[in-house]
Length: 143
Image (cartoon, rainbow, N blue to C red; front, side, top):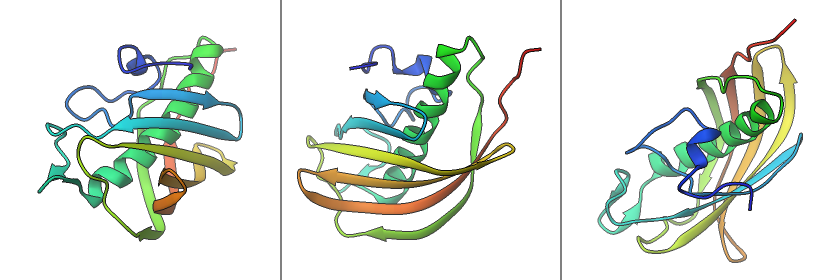
């Protein structure tokens, strides 16, 4: 485990109440895996389920955790990122509160300050949500 709920904000710019990942399970240059415990007080839980905006934000923060982990390893400040586009969003089910989801993001391309990634949220073997996301994050470079 690379980070837990207590220290995940080292790698992402988001702060409570919008932190949508709890554990950073693995991260490398091309892939990142996180987990989220869907708590009843999560701002995206409505009617006992994590709603679609929470799923999209979870994928975006998982991608941000990959960038943040890279930055931390290289002593670069964690950048603020922005979702530039979401493509091919598919939601097959909304996770129940008090359940746990695993999110994996695979980096497809990096061009200048843009990262294009493919994200997938699962519970066990079941895919709940997937999409392609374009994220803008300007990294500070050191000379």
